[in-house]
Length: 149
Image (cartoon, rainbow, N blue to C red; front, side, top):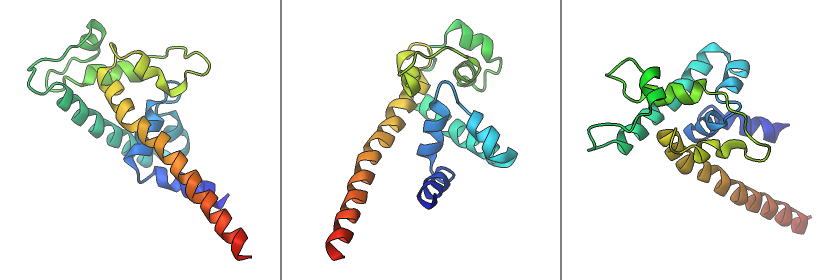
């Protein structure tokens, strides 16, 4: 339980953990809303939104325009926030995700969610690569302690 609590506590201080949890097509911000309380939920949402806006700006730098879909344009009525359409479209869309597809949904809908897709490519790779190294360190610790006893 202590190890699980340690990992859970890391999610509150890591943009990567928070963004990966928000990327899950079925969960999005539900976990934060249910388990973190209003203030921490708002902090998590702000963290994801800041990263989303930065990613949006990088994707659309120099183009002068965004490749917004009709749905995105309708979802955003504020011209000072061109990113808001895609942000709201992803958060408000409740698509059924086939079993086994899980968190890869933004990657499958790259044409609808280009900024979310870019975040998924950047952040989901972190989570995958960190699991194997954590296992390696854990296994090494077990091996060392067995030999010392």
